Amino acid sequence: MTDIRKSVGARRVHMASLAGHRQSYQDLFTRMFDLTPSMGRIGRRNFAELVRAQSLLFGTIDDDYRGFFIVSLARAFLGRRTVGLFLRPQTCFGYSGLRYTIKRFAFMALKPICLVSVFTIVPFSVAPQYRRVATGGVLDPQLWDIEADATVPCDADMTTRVRTAAQGRRVLAFLGTVSAGKGIEFLLDLMTDPAWPHDQLLPVVAGRFPDDTQPLSAQLSDAGALVLDRFISEDELQTLYTCADLVWACYRSDYDQASGIFGRAIQFGKTPVVRAGSLIASLAESISIQMITLDNGASSQAGHLRDAAEKCGHGGLATMPIEGWKQEFETTIRSAL
Image (cartoon, rainbow, N blue to C red; front, side, top):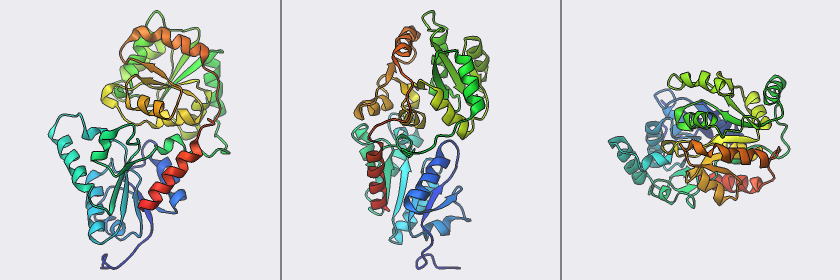
């Protein structure tokens, strides 16, 4: 067997899973840092190749914490650097239970190891507590990963369906897996409030409904939403961003984390709807993003969305300091690698 203490392998970006926007992460990091993609939970099959990699970036550590710790510690013992993106550091704080306490102390113990760098996708200026468990904070790639001159895919059938259903109304898009944590019950409460602007705003709920929210699918349709209860392709997803005026990111307090949906809304020049006092509301304020804030659970705010629907405009790709965000991310991660 090859001695991993002496051998050096390829430069790799590793993902335990490619679900959600993780495929986008892997594709981006492969191009940006000239890395070879690797996928799967850490085990006998891939442990050695990751330990001996010349450079190693975990595109996210959240899907296999154990694997990340084992590989990064082995590489540190051999004098090799490891970098990982931490998508859900908030679970180290404010959650009861032994596993969350263990998780927090494990990352606190890992932080002093100079050959292991962990970066949250929310800057420390927004979430100072993350300093306890991570090396640094960067802006989520979903805020800046679309090239300024990129051709945005367009699904003609999806465009026609949404525009036909809207009949000139503004569009509020709820995108991705329709989980309770993303506030789908709150959206339904808003839609059934007498002040809901049925004549001005069409909610489009596009994504699979898990078993626990499946009963809400019919209720949303009955309340006037266009519901697409199925897997949404990448082209369809980007088309929905293009069609939308408002994008739902008003998540429950127990789902207080960075959001790729929020980031993509910003890039497409759409107005995000967020929970007042949430992490992404603080992030939006810190980078001067226009947003609509709602107090989660207060259906009386339906009239607030009426006012927002009247004011919002149809935007294209945002003209924001996206290139600067991208350069800062690339410089930070490349230095750590």
